[in-house]
Amino acid sequence: MSGESEASKPTLVERLREQRERHAERRRIVRVAFALAGFTMLFAGLAMLVLPGPALAVIPVALAILSLEFTWAGRWLDFAIEKAEEAKQTAKETTRTQRIVVAIAVALGVAAAIAASILWEIPIVPYT
Image (cartoon, rainbow, N blue to C red; front, side, top):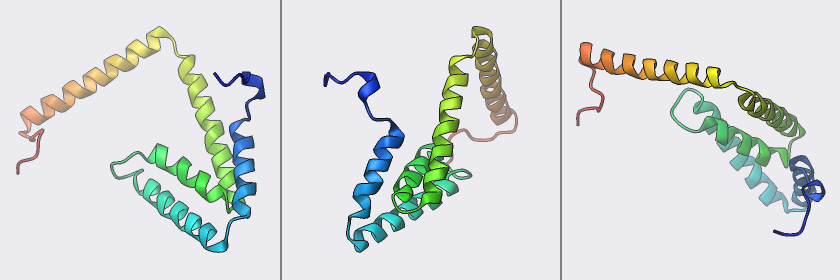
């Protein structure tokens, strides 16, 4: 342990604000590179919403990078963090019955996918 209490640790928002201040002192070429990297990651994350990939991990990282330069990205990041906290709290508040119902629904969905692949001769593993 570092000896710091939980109350004295800076919040995520405070750490981002400090990082923005340090970033503003960097050379222009570094700041442009950060912006390009951030937009590249953001577009990749948005594409991952419909393509395979960890969109819900990539988009917040891209927004964090972009928030160093752009206030709109900071607002979107704050919104994303707020929604993630709400989702975390909602997940904590689920009852045992709700978890069981979701597990049964997932199991039925998997069983239906397997049955469909057998009945309609859809290969589970693609042929090479």
